Amino acid sequence: MANWDDYRFFLAVARAGRVTLAAKLLGTDHSTVSRRIGTLEEVLGAALFERSPRGYVLTAQGAQLLKSAEEMESTTLLAQSEISGSAQDYAGPVRIASPEGFGSYFLSWRLPQLLKAHPRLQLQIAAMPTIFSLTRREADIVISLSRPTTGRIHARKLTDYQLGLYAAPDYLDKHPPIERVSQLAQHAFIAYDDLTPYPEVNYLPEVGANIKPQLTSTNLFTQLLATMSGFGLCVLPHFVAAHRSDLRSVLPDEVSITRSYWLTVHSDLRRLSRVRLVSDFIASQVAAHRSSFLPPDRSQIGTQPDNPSHAVDQA
Image (cartoon, rainbow, N blue to C red):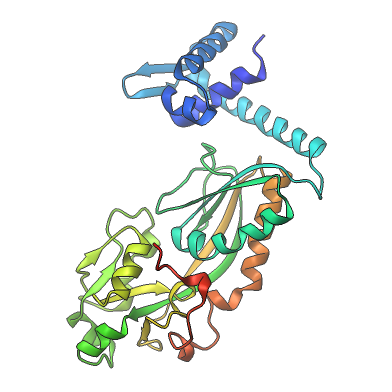
Protein backbone atom coordinates (compact mmCIF):
# COMPACT_ATOMS: atom_id res chain seq x y z
CA MET A 1 0.00 0.00 0.00
CA ALA A 2 1.10 3.55 -0.65
CA ASN A 3 1.93 5.60 2.41
CA TRP A 4 1.23 9.28 3.07
CA ASP A 5 4.69 10.33 1.88
CA ASP A 6 3.90 8.98 -1.60
CA TYR A 7 0.83 11.21 -1.76
CA ARG A 8 2.85 14.16 -0.46
CA PHE A 9 5.23 13.77 -3.41
CA PHE A 10 2.28 13.40 -5.76
CA LEU A 11 0.75 16.68 -4.50
CA ALA A 12 4.03 18.53 -4.90
CA VAL A 13 4.40 17.46 -8.54
CA ALA A 14 0.73 18.13 -9.30
CA ARG A 15 1.04 21.68 -7.99
CA ALA A 16 4.49 22.48 -9.36
CA GLY A 17 4.08 20.83 -12.77
CA ARG A 18 7.76 19.88 -12.80
CA VAL A 19 9.75 17.31 -10.89
CA THR A 20 12.70 19.65 -10.39
CA LEU A 21 10.53 22.37 -8.86
CA ALA A 22 8.67 19.84 -6.70
CA ALA A 23 12.01 18.51 -5.44
CA LYS A 24 13.06 22.03 -4.48
CA LEU A 25 9.83 22.60 -2.58
CA LEU A 26 10.21 19.28 -0.78
CA GLY A 27 13.89 19.77 -0.01
CA THR A 28 15.04 16.66 -1.86
CA ASP A 29 16.44 15.70 -5.27
CA HIS A 30 14.51 15.11 -8.49
CA SER A 31 15.44 11.44 -8.72
CA THR A 32 13.78 10.80 -5.36
CA VAL A 33 10.64 12.57 -6.49
CA SER A 34 10.52 10.59 -9.73
CA ARG A 35 11.03 7.35 -7.86
CA ARG A 36 8.26 8.07 -5.36
CA ILE A 37 5.83 9.01 -8.14
CA GLY A 38 6.72 5.79 -9.96
CA THR A 39 6.11 3.79 -6.78
CA LEU A 40 2.70 5.37 -6.27
CA GLU A 41 1.68 4.71 -9.86
CA GLU A 42 2.79 1.10 -9.53
CA VAL A 43 0.83 0.59 -6.31
CA LEU A 44 -2.31 2.18 -7.75
CA GLY A 45 -1.93 0.54 -11.13
CA ALA A 46 -2.54 3.79 -13.00
CA ALA A 47 -0.55 6.51 -14.75
CA LEU A 48 -1.03 9.72 -12.79
CA PHE A 49 0.90 12.09 -15.06
CA GLU A 50 1.58 12.63 -18.72
CA ARG A 51 5.31 13.36 -19.07
CA SER A 52 6.59 15.83 -21.64
CA PRO A 53 9.53 18.25 -22.03
CA ARG A 54 7.19 20.99 -20.83
CA GLY A 55 6.46 19.24 -17.54
CA TYR A 56 4.03 16.89 -15.84
CA VAL A 57 0.29 17.11 -16.53
CA LEU A 58 -2.31 15.15 -14.57
CA THR A 59 -4.07 12.31 -16.35
CA ALA A 60 -7.78 11.70 -15.71
CA GLN A 61 -6.83 9.24 -12.95
CA GLY A 62 -4.37 11.77 -11.51
CA ALA A 63 -7.00 14.51 -11.44
CA GLN A 64 -9.36 12.13 -9.66
CA LEU A 65 -6.68 11.31 -7.08
CA LEU A 66 -5.79 14.98 -6.51
CA LYS A 67 -8.98 15.78 -4.58
CA SER A 68 -8.59 12.77 -2.29
CA ALA A 69 -4.91 13.53 -1.72
CA GLU A 70 -5.70 17.13 -0.75
CA GLU A 71 -8.34 15.90 1.69
CA MET A 72 -5.75 13.56 3.25
CA GLU A 73 -3.29 16.44 3.47
CA SER A 74 -5.82 18.68 5.20
CA THR A 75 -6.82 15.96 7.65
CA THR A 76 -3.17 15.27 8.49
CA LEU A 77 -2.36 18.94 9.02
CA LEU A 78 -5.43 19.49 11.17
CA ALA A 79 -4.70 16.41 13.28
CA GLN A 80 -1.13 17.58 13.87
CA SER A 81 -2.38 21.01 14.80
CA GLU A 82 -4.95 19.73 17.27
CA ILE A 83 -2.57 17.30 18.95
CA SER A 84 0.67 19.27 19.11
CA GLY A 85 -0.60 22.85 19.08
CA SER A 86 -2.15 24.89 21.85
CA ALA A 87 -3.01 28.51 22.40
CA GLN A 88 0.41 28.95 24.00
CA ASP A 89 2.48 26.90 21.59
CA TYR A 90 1.91 27.65 17.93
CA ALA A 91 4.61 26.14 15.75
CA GLY A 92 5.45 25.61 12.10
CA PRO A 93 5.59 27.63 8.87
CA VAL A 94 2.95 29.99 7.50
CA ARG A 95 3.52 31.53 4.06
CA ILE A 96 1.83 34.87 3.40
CA ALA A 97 1.50 36.24 -0.14
CA SER A 98 0.72 39.91 -0.45
CA PRO A 99 0.91 42.91 -2.76
CA GLU A 100 4.23 44.60 -2.04
CA GLY A 101 2.75 47.76 -0.57
CA PHE A 102 0.75 45.95 2.10
CA GLY A 103 3.39 43.31 2.75
CA SER A 104 6.41 45.59 2.93
CA TYR A 105 4.95 48.79 4.37
CA PHE A 106 2.43 47.33 6.79
CA LEU A 107 2.96 43.65 7.59
CA SER A 108 6.75 43.63 7.82
CA TRP A 109 6.65 46.12 10.70
CA ARG A 110 4.05 44.22 12.70
CA LEU A 111 4.55 40.48 12.18
CA PRO A 112 7.69 40.45 14.40
CA GLN A 113 5.33 41.13 17.34
CA LEU A 114 3.66 37.81 16.62
CA LEU A 115 6.98 35.97 16.31
CA LYS A 116 8.15 37.31 19.66
CA ALA A 117 5.01 35.94 21.29
CA HIS A 118 5.30 32.59 19.47
CA PRO A 119 8.99 31.85 18.80
CA ARG A 120 8.28 28.43 17.26
CA LEU A 121 6.20 30.04 14.53
CA GLN A 122 7.90 30.55 11.16
CA LEU A 123 6.57 33.29 8.89
CA GLN A 124 7.40 33.72 5.20
CA ILE A 125 6.29 36.92 3.45
CA ALA A 126 6.12 36.97 -0.34
CA ALA A 127 5.47 40.65 -1.06
CA MET A 128 5.67 40.99 -4.80
CA PRO A 129 3.50 41.80 -7.86
CA THR A 130 2.53 38.16 -8.44
CA ILE A 131 -0.76 36.31 -8.09
CA PHE A 132 -0.34 33.27 -5.83
CA SER A 133 -2.58 30.20 -5.90
CA LEU A 134 -4.08 28.79 -2.72
CA THR A 135 -5.22 25.72 -4.65
CA ARG A 136 -1.63 24.88 -5.60
CA ARG A 137 -0.54 25.67 -2.02
CA GLU A 138 1.79 28.43 -3.18
CA ALA A 139 0.78 30.26 -0.02
CA ASP A 140 -1.24 29.59 3.13
CA ILE A 141 -2.67 33.12 3.33
CA VAL A 142 -3.17 35.43 0.36
CA ILE A 143 -3.84 39.16 0.57
CA SER A 144 -5.49 40.33 -2.65
CA LEU A 145 -6.99 43.47 -4.13
CA SER A 146 -10.30 41.84 -4.95
CA ARG A 147 -12.41 39.04 -3.59
CA PRO A 148 -11.60 35.72 -5.28
CA THR A 149 -14.62 34.07 -6.84
CA THR A 150 -13.40 30.54 -7.55
CA GLY A 151 -11.91 27.66 -5.60
CA ARG A 152 -12.48 26.23 -2.13
CA ILE A 153 -11.51 29.33 -0.22
CA HIS A 154 -12.60 31.44 2.72
CA ALA A 155 -12.33 35.19 2.17
CA ARG A 156 -12.82 38.17 4.42
CA LYS A 157 -12.47 41.83 3.67
CA LEU A 158 -9.70 43.51 5.65
CA THR A 159 -10.30 47.13 4.73
CA ASP A 160 -10.81 49.69 2.04
CA TYR A 161 -7.84 51.97 1.50
CA GLN A 162 -7.36 55.27 -0.25
CA LEU A 163 -4.78 56.41 -2.76
CA GLY A 164 -3.89 59.87 -3.94
CA LEU A 165 -1.60 61.77 -6.25
CA TYR A 166 1.89 62.62 -4.96
CA ALA A 167 5.01 64.44 -6.13
CA ALA A 168 8.32 65.54 -4.64
CA PRO A 169 8.64 69.19 -3.53
CA ASP A 170 11.50 69.58 -6.01
CA TYR A 171 9.25 68.57 -8.92
CA LEU A 172 6.45 70.91 -7.82
CA ASP A 173 8.87 73.83 -7.37
CA LYS A 174 10.28 73.46 -10.90
CA HIS A 175 6.98 73.05 -12.76
CA PRO A 176 3.85 75.16 -13.19
CA PRO A 177 1.37 75.02 -10.31
CA ILE A 178 -1.27 72.30 -10.54
CA GLU A 179 -4.64 73.80 -9.71
CA ARG A 180 -7.06 71.51 -11.52
CA VAL A 181 -7.23 68.03 -13.02
CA SER A 182 -7.21 69.29 -16.61
CA GLN A 183 -3.61 70.49 -16.15
CA LEU A 184 -2.29 67.03 -15.21
CA ALA A 185 -1.88 65.83 -18.81
CA GLN A 186 0.99 68.33 -19.20
CA HIS A 187 3.03 66.67 -16.44
CA ALA A 188 5.29 63.63 -16.21
CA PHE A 189 3.68 60.54 -14.64
CA ILE A 190 4.94 57.33 -13.06
CA ALA A 191 2.63 54.32 -13.05
CA TYR A 192 2.29 50.54 -13.19
CA ASP A 193 3.01 48.93 -16.52
CA ASP A 194 0.95 46.44 -18.49
CA LEU A 195 2.83 43.46 -17.05
CA THR A 196 1.35 43.81 -13.58
CA PRO A 197 -1.11 40.99 -12.80
CA TYR A 198 -3.46 43.30 -10.88
CA PRO A 199 -5.97 45.17 -13.09
CA GLU A 200 -7.00 47.13 -9.99
CA VAL A 201 -3.78 49.19 -10.10
CA ASN A 202 -4.57 50.81 -13.45
CA TYR A 203 -5.26 54.14 -11.73
CA LEU A 204 -4.60 56.80 -14.36
CA PRO A 205 -7.95 56.54 -16.20
CA GLU A 206 -9.57 57.44 -12.87
CA VAL A 207 -7.25 60.43 -12.43
CA GLY A 208 -7.94 62.15 -15.72
CA ALA A 209 -8.19 61.80 -19.47
CA ASN A 210 -5.17 61.81 -21.79
CA ILE A 211 -2.65 61.06 -19.04
CA LYS A 212 0.19 58.91 -20.33
CA PRO A 213 2.98 57.75 -18.00
CA GLN A 214 6.59 58.35 -19.03
CA LEU A 215 7.97 55.84 -16.53
CA THR A 216 6.27 52.52 -15.75
CA SER A 217 7.13 49.61 -13.47
CA THR A 218 5.49 46.58 -11.89
CA ASN A 219 7.32 47.50 -8.68
CA LEU A 220 5.86 49.94 -6.16
CA PHE A 221 9.29 50.69 -4.69
CA THR A 222 10.54 51.76 -8.11
CA GLN A 223 7.59 54.09 -8.52
CA LEU A 224 7.98 55.54 -5.04
CA LEU A 225 11.70 56.19 -5.37
CA ALA A 226 11.26 57.71 -8.84
CA THR A 227 8.63 60.03 -7.39
CA MET A 228 10.90 61.00 -4.50
CA SER A 229 13.68 61.74 -6.99
CA GLY A 230 11.57 64.53 -8.48
CA PHE A 231 10.78 62.87 -11.81
CA GLY A 232 7.02 63.28 -11.82
CA LEU A 233 3.65 62.53 -10.27
CA CYS A 234 2.44 59.13 -9.09
CA VAL A 235 -0.67 57.58 -7.57
CA LEU A 236 0.37 56.08 -4.23
CA PRO A 237 -1.47 54.55 -1.25
CA HIS A 238 -1.85 57.05 1.55
CA PHE A 239 -0.51 54.54 4.08
CA VAL A 240 2.72 54.44 2.08
CA ALA A 241 3.14 58.12 1.21
CA ALA A 242 1.05 60.31 3.50
CA HIS A 243 3.60 60.67 6.31
CA ARG A 244 6.63 61.35 4.18
CA SER A 245 8.02 64.89 4.40
CA ASP A 246 9.73 64.36 1.02
CA LEU A 247 6.39 63.99 -0.79
CA ARG A 248 3.48 66.37 -1.27
CA SER A 249 -0.13 65.57 -1.98
CA VAL A 250 -1.46 66.96 -5.27
CA LEU A 251 -5.15 67.86 -5.68
CA PRO A 252 -6.22 65.76 -2.67
CA ASP A 253 -9.85 66.88 -2.95
CA GLU A 254 -10.10 66.06 -6.66
CA VAL A 255 -8.00 62.88 -6.88
CA SER A 256 -9.04 60.20 -4.42
CA ILE A 257 -9.09 56.52 -5.38
CA THR A 258 -10.37 53.67 -3.22
CA ARG A 259 -9.36 50.03 -3.37
CA SER A 260 -9.76 47.07 -0.99
CA TYR A 261 -7.64 44.40 0.66
CA TRP A 262 -9.02 40.88 1.07
CA LEU A 263 -7.57 38.04 3.14
CA THR A 264 -8.15 34.53 1.81
CA VAL A 265 -7.18 31.07 2.98
CA HIS A 266 -7.92 27.66 1.52
CA SER A 267 -10.96 26.14 3.19
CA ASP A 268 -8.96 23.07 4.13
CA LEU A 269 -6.41 25.18 6.04
CA ARG A 270 -8.84 27.56 7.68
CA ARG A 271 -8.98 25.56 10.93
CA LEU A 272 -5.24 24.94 11.12
CA SER A 273 -4.28 26.67 14.36
CA ARG A 274 -1.19 28.51 13.15
CA VAL A 275 -2.93 29.71 9.98
CA ARG A 276 -5.91 30.91 12.02
CA LEU A 277 -3.57 32.66 14.47
CA VAL A 278 -1.76 34.58 11.72
CA SER A 279 -4.98 35.43 9.85
CA ASP A 280 -6.59 36.80 12.99
CA PHE A 281 -3.47 38.78 13.87
CA ILE A 282 -3.35 40.43 10.44
CA ALA A 283 -7.05 41.31 10.63
CA SER A 284 -6.67 42.75 14.13
CA GLN A 285 -3.68 44.88 13.12
CA VAL A 286 -5.53 46.28 10.13
CA ALA A 287 -8.53 47.10 12.33
CA ALA A 288 -6.29 48.80 14.91
CA HIS A 289 -4.65 50.98 12.24
CA ARG A 290 -7.71 51.71 10.11
CA SER A 291 -6.92 55.42 9.95
CA SER A 292 -3.66 54.65 8.13
CA PHE A 293 -5.64 53.17 5.26
CA LEU A 294 -8.53 55.64 5.34
CA PRO A 295 -7.16 59.03 6.48
CA PRO A 296 -9.91 60.95 8.27
CA ASP A 297 -8.57 64.34 7.15
CA ARG A 298 -7.06 64.50 3.67
CA SER A 299 -5.98 68.09 4.25
CA GLN A 300 -3.18 66.76 6.45
CA ILE A 301 -1.85 64.35 3.83
CA GLY A 302 1.78 65.01 3.02
CA THR A 303 2.25 67.56 5.82
CA GLN A 304 3.30 65.30 8.68
CA PRO A 305 6.87 64.24 9.58
CA ASP A 306 8.33 60.94 8.48
CA ASN A 307 7.23 57.82 10.29
CA PRO A 308 10.03 55.21 10.42
CA SER A 309 7.54 52.50 9.52
CA HIS A 310 7.16 54.05 6.06
CA ALA A 311 10.84 54.64 5.29
CA VAL A 312 12.24 53.13 2.09
CA ASP A 313 15.54 54.94 1.83
CA GLN A 314 17.41 51.65 2.23
CA ALA A 315 15.54 50.11 -0.73
